Image 1 (cartoon, one colour):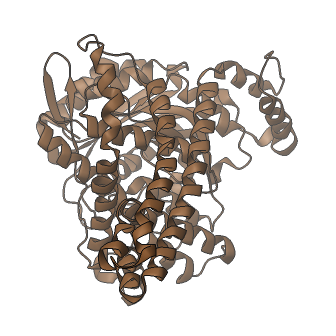
Image 2 (image 1 turned 180 degrees about the horizontal axis):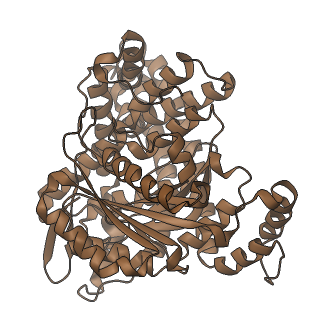
Length: 537
């Protein structure tokens, strides 16, 4: 079986390095283009900037429409009786009155194309991997409580606590405490300590959950359970599944025609501590939440992110997750894609898994922690070289037109992440400053301002949806907190420029020069009750 692991830095030849340089090179070219064109011709620069603004105006309108559609879908799916839908799927008989039309179609399709070879909902076990380093029980216990509050048979749950040996004895004691307190409520519960300094691994979540997965495989083999009937969901320590998540996941899995070749992506919503986080972090958290909602409506572009699920049989085939990258979640899509020669798809689950916004014990550290987190996410640009390497430089059976489309979609996504806020906010002023005598250069800021004003109307959609998605306000906050939740949107230009653009430019520039991020930068977060209890994440 051919290797699907990322080459070690010393093994990356000039071809691989060329594709590592590519995202940053294109990003810097686009960022410098207004300056270069302004020095050549203010008219040419103005046409370039106007075309760019028009393109993104249209795309922003599309994103706003998708956010409304996705929010409606999420509300509908959260309100469905998934256990009853699973009962219908079990027998392939539509007994539930008022069920969605797609449910009846699913039953007919499963009966026709899958039949007796299918996995029934009653046969599915859920393995829940919870990864942690040195988080406190105040962070971890609510996560396990949320799992156990699921509208699902808990004796179909297997808990795997994947903790880092490098965190020392406190982490081991916490794992044992959690097993003692919660273990008996699961079908099986186990804690796996990931040894420190395993050769060839970067310090990160991928190595931790992969080591736990290999130990878990020994247990499953001993029990004689079918790995194709075990769904693995990976959670960070603050990831709290909606009560309907596991039932919806079981339904989607059991109605998938080829489940081995599929993974499943719930919607990450950063609302756990949204009332407590500083205003800039609330804006970022809300933006991240609705970015995930939007992309759930684009299954052709969907990839794994944060908490996600995959059948254990597929994880066996990929030898679990990568141990050589700090973005093991998104990278897992590409590992599976190339293991199965392109025969892999991500299915959206329109049910939330609630996560924390960034919050530490003081404002300055919170600002820094947020930047580090987004920079880590932006390191997904490293997948551009991996996709080119596995898709174009290694033998495979993947349709080249489909592969090229996926490659350019991946590349465009990371380049846009770095460039769009800068170009939309600042580019229109460059021809004016370099060519103040030019009429078109003088008019460009006014044209850009009008287009941006129209685009900013979409913020009102985000504002409305953000209030709809808020959890109940903690009793410690007065009504005026609602006012601050409203005016926080004045931070949007600041957060998009400093956090999204600068963080992505930082990651891509580091990748260009081979300054690799060799470890998973743990993000500090805090639990805020009457006091603040800070633990790293």
